[in-house]
Amino acid sequence: MIQATAVSSKKPTLSPIFIIGMLFFIFGFITWLNSVLIPYLKLACELTTVEAYLVTTAFYISYFVLAIPSAGILKITGFKKGMSVGLGIIAVGALIFIPAALTRYYGLFLLGLFVQGSGLALLQTASNPYITILGPPESAAKRISIMGVCNKVAGALAPIILGAITLKNADGLKERLAAMAPAAKVAELNELASRVILPYIVIVIVLLILAVVIYYSSLPEVDTDQEDESTAISNSGKTSITQFPHLLLGVVTLFFYVGVEVIAGDTIINYGSTQGIALGTAKFFTTGTLIFMLLGYGVGILCIPKYLSQEKAMKLSAGLGLILSVVAIVTTGYVSVGAVALLGLANSLVWPAIWPMALAGLGRFTKIGSSLLIMGIAGGAIVPLAYGALAQALNPSYGYIILIPAYLIILYYAISGHKVGKAKLSHEQL
Image 1: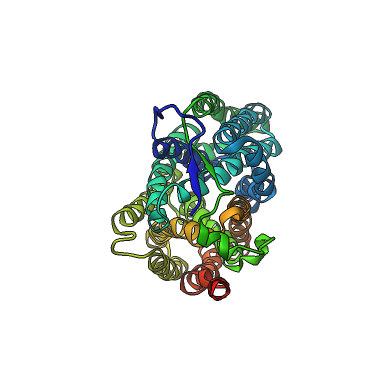
Image 2: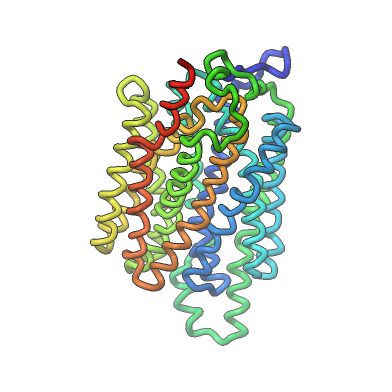
């Protein structure tokens, strides 16, 4: 068991769970703004479907690039200061949206998203293992489910708030643009692009305030280099993270999981519009997906580990995901959109289960293991882009075919992938 040691002898003024909960709220709010940015930027910057999904690529590829450097930064700063630095980086990325909006240059928007993702990579590298090891391992999925509630409440609010500002009267605007003269069209699109300026100024201010709060908080430090006796024995002679195959398989699983979670949340607004549903209505669909995720987190909080093991929860989630994927593909209209929204329920308990299962027994390798898992978040950059390509080449419904192999991989990890290599370690201890 990894030991948690306080960096200060002062009594904490805010509980660690509450502080990390605030961070997960920020994760959710920033991340799920992308669901609105995709249709918004597609309209404002006159993009194709594939170009619009570069929003998710630019945002999530940063996790792959920054995950390993994040582990190095945390070794220098520790968890608490590293979290403050991450919030500051996200604020810089949000600030880039202002010149991007003023110039209506899509490349600047993508740069801002990449920088925001970079800050989140650092925050996620710190906060996910922190909440995993800040208590008994058998209830880690419950703690992560609580964090998931914070994350998805923010995620449910984000598209409603930003959508009300950026997609206001978007359906009428699309019709007017088709009949406008070039000069008038440019002026109208410039006004549309400027709608994100005020929201992102507010985001920058909030992020900087929270960074200061975290920096001066009494959040206890966690020493991931200390191991209990049994973990030290099992890891004796281990020199590389590659000697933990259950962790490496966990990274692959998390890659595909994040891909399907992003698809369920970030494609549904645009997908709804392709099914003949007005953007004024479709802008609420991501909130629906996240409400279903919240219901799933509620199940996790109530049932794990008392009534439901982490492994079984993940099996049930993968099975439900497969069923809903088929429904989304073979149906149309509100039924198909509803199946995509219900994927939020299927996805809800996968993330909370992967982390404790993949980090089990890593001991002093926890920081680098966490970094590799964070790299897996890059699935949000690749899998949705594959959906976009399939949707454009075939049709939007058939694009969801990409979900089926992803859920099969998740099911494999839940059944046996998380055990790979562990039996050998147990034998070596005999």
